[in-house]
Length: 393
Ligand code: ATP
Ligand code: MG
Image (tube, rainbow, N blue to C red; front, side):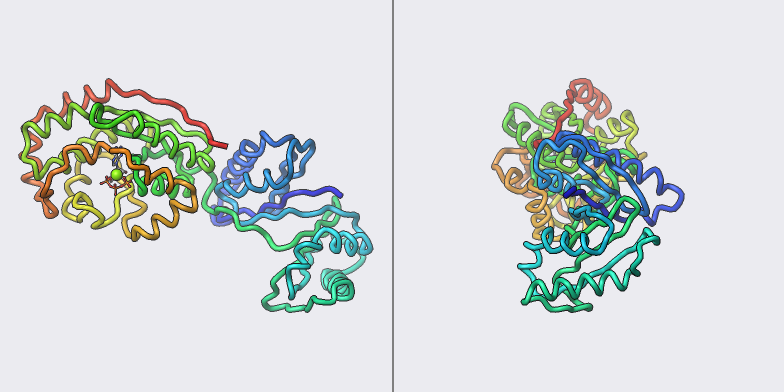
């Protein structure tokens, strides 16, 4: 019996004229993701993608797990391909879905007869198979409204496909289908989640991390690399840029009032980010800020950092989310356990005892103007280094 994977694509049906491009991107991403598991035929027909193993180097479960990480997929199922006659459909359903049937009490059969030359109607196929399974499994009952198990039969030119309940996909839009963004990644809980959410909406994520040696360590950098490796289960590969802002921090500490230290530093981060984003054709900057979470994320503080970016929008996917909800996503995507490792971040270096929670932009600029911002920014950017990070799996 040949087993295949049927994939229902997500929101792509909303995309009108661009639909074809999105579909092509999705198919390319699926192929890239499952490539290591063997050779596959990947075909699209009527918003369903069929993945047929031609030479499988592993078990199908590995392929299913990988497909579970591909953005743009609503749901997917493994399905058995059998001969297009009712006898084969009955025996295949009984054997192939036995494990699922034994775990369930109520079921129904749904049939889609794309091949109209099949002698029975969809209704007749569902009724015949339903009756057969009721006779074969004493514990089963039919429930057409809320069945625990729905058995799907699809009659196509190539044969009959039998499958049970689908597995939920990760959703979103195909990776790298909606333009490029520069995402500011710290080693914390929030920013990996904000990068994930943007990537899920199809953004091509370029990552930027600020370091501050000797105040921050190599371990803090390695932490960010491991976070990105985890994210690459979904993003596949990511370029990570490192910028050292120790010198900027020292200058702020020396010349500016302590209560403005964090805000001025964050404005530097945003200005540097904008320059790098523009040089790399990014259409936006992304942060993991959430309203009111810390002193630098009050509305007044956000006004001060936001205006540091003159040309590009700053996207904050977590702005209205509670920390607990952010943590839930971090756990689901596997970044949480790394994020909580206790290594220092440049934002925790020289933090003021009493940061301003209602800063005025005027005072912030007055303090900031004591520094030669342009030259400090250029020097920091000149020292940048970057690396391409692949997936963990
Ligand atoms: P996170 O959990 O993401 O570290 P946070 O609540 O600790 O967030 P802050 O430290 O104020 O908040 O940082 C706010 C945002 O600024 C982060 O979400 C991230 O986008 C960016 N950021 C903070 N530190 C760095 C860094 N070292 N490099 C790059 N971006 C950073
Ligand atoms: Mg942080």
